[in-house]
Image (cartoon, rainbow, N blue to C red; front, side, top):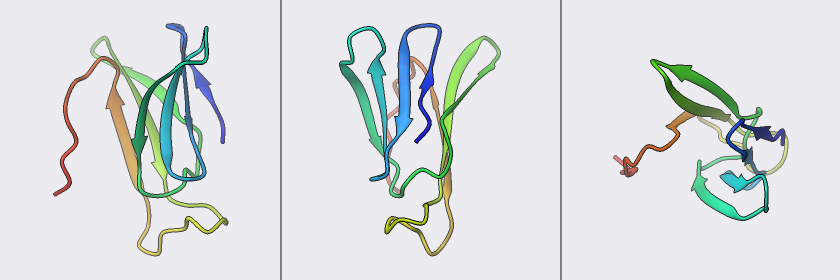
Length: 88
């Protein structure tokens, strides 16, 4: 689990239970949580496209019990976005 902190005082980390979590880096308050379906296998990254900031994480399992047989998923989220996730 490798945390990522942003210049806007957000702290992101994917947990071994598959939850990608965002906290306020100043006070530790949890702001957002998303279940990726599998443990994170890398740290969270941040990038920018056309002036919009995104975060991304690869959820592909680890050597602990949360290991997918079919492979992993790359999740990406726009900061300040408001789209709702719908399972297909």
